[in-house]
Image 1 (cartoon, rainbow, N blue to C red):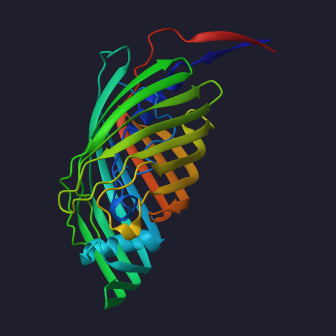
Image 2: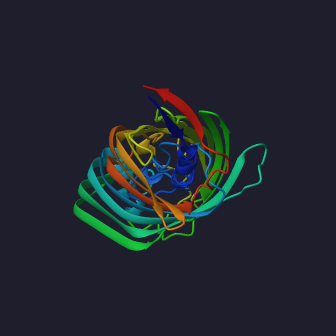
Image 3: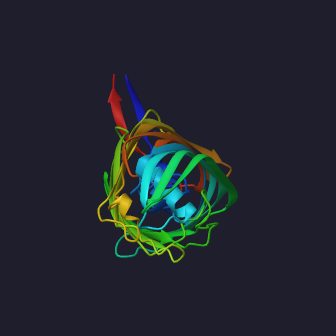
Length: 357
């Protein structure tokens, strides 16, 4: 007996129509989350994950992300924020008996346009991310400062929160496809227009500009459903004009691995490694070079589905953090929903192969 099985070519197109957008979010940060000045960096680890380098379908698309983080810090990472808020002179001696707790709930919007005309043999996409949400932080403990014979001790709790808009984060990507191999390069940065004050404990902006660039690779075998992606980059931070503080250069790598259980559903793991590679400038001597580091890993699940004439995509991923140094650490979750153009239906007749039974 003979029967014919069609092998549709739309599987990879379906994925490129949506996940290429979902991972194209511009780099962003929320004040309680991460490194450098106050333990807060421009780069938010986890922004790239699975299928990061896979090209998308040309046209306009939109991604919306709900991001939640809950972190804490002791010692230098907590005292750095207290020193800034309290305007403690850099030449004093400081006892670092403090604990910082911080949370953020953010909504991010990322419109992106993907060009159909090749650029340098690849696919160019440009976009910008804006955010709105709430950031909150609390300091508990004792901060003791001494200048000569004079000693001042501050004990208790200091809390602050803000609900407002954050900075803007433009981004451009260029992607190439060669069968199961996909390559990308990107350039992004920070336009510091968000809610920020050097006297506040919690902020949604970071108070300074930044430029970040790097490259990535995705292995995607659509027949077997195997996928692995990694994107690495460097951040150069400009000086904060309000505090005269300049963060050092940061290195980061985000990765994701997944297995497609069907054409629409996949599961896998995500992770990141973040390391500051040069010292800060303008920090109090008690903090030293104040280089920061953190590692994160966790699960993910993604689902693709049609929305009228558009392609919808849902992804949920979470990270638990460890090996942190000079920055808060804890856990964070990302819930992404995106809409993008539907992949065009091939006009070529499906390839058929004979299965003999």
